[in-house]
Length: 236
Figure 1 (tube, rainbow, N blue to C red):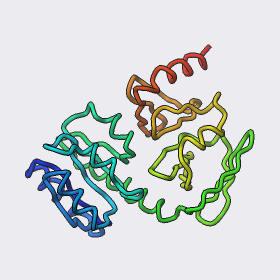
Figure 2: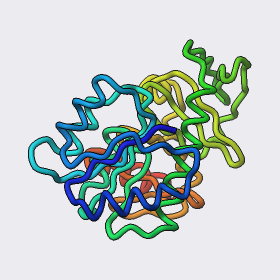
Figure 3: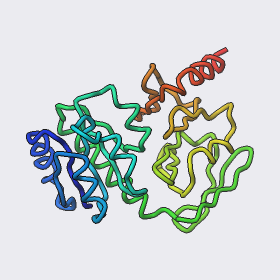
């Protein structure tokens, strides 16, 4: 996996680089103190993963994220937890708050490897058939029947969706808006630009996060009121 580090703090870049040295299958091909410099590098070099700060002089990390190629994965590493929801609006796969704890960092990197494998397996030709109780998805050169009741949540990742099931994940080339429009709205709730949840699996929630088993799913601010109304209506 090819990776770059973008952070305006030299000590932060050094610390991230040291953590990455534990992975023999990660190659750090660049380290930058400005998003603009990283963008110039990316215009002529392909990378799989970017570890990116948000608040930097000039171009911000969020602005850089909006320019990225479809299959470039992004993990934000920042001292500002208030940007968490916005980070998922640009399809970040994870969001780490400084100071970085090594176990949390390694969890994010494992997630990147998982997503990279899923993206390699994805079929570029979308094919979904919808029925009242299930969807039929083409994934890894075969059709998979997925019953609505077994879907925990659906995650948008660039031009793909990842359907999270209790014991597996399935990826297919489809945008989140299309799949949401074909799912029963009494079960599935759009909670951000990047996530749809099955409300029957919600364990807990607050104004920022929904918990489904061990997964923490961010709630977008513009979706919060609708989410509250639907959850409250479901309890009546």
